[in-house]
Image (cartoon, rainbow, N blue to C red; front, side):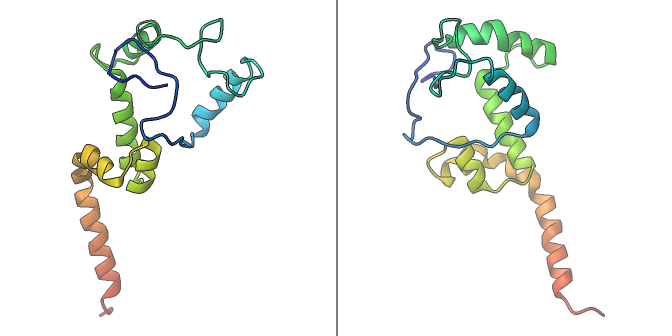
Length: 146
């Protein structure tokens, strides 16, 4: 499900912007609750993960107001946290976990590595000291021992 503009209140069910589906591996802490939830869904492979009681899509604005804003408040996040901030947080966590840019690109569904680096490249300088330390270690290991 995508929304062409943030907080537009209209959900579009259909292909991604690139027209390609993508597989997103989940950590077990997220997978287990999702699998438990899926057991409550109709035995229909095309059923939405989250839907109204009738199985139709939940309006973006409704999900945001009824579920995400209260969850943000409980978590201590600022009131002005946007839906898209979750995507940026996810990308930041992947970068902080030393995720390979190509893998991050694929998980975010970007059309090219350039898009990923242009959007999230500002987060990479934080890794500069670590990169320098790794380079120093590689050089030290390559030099003859005295």
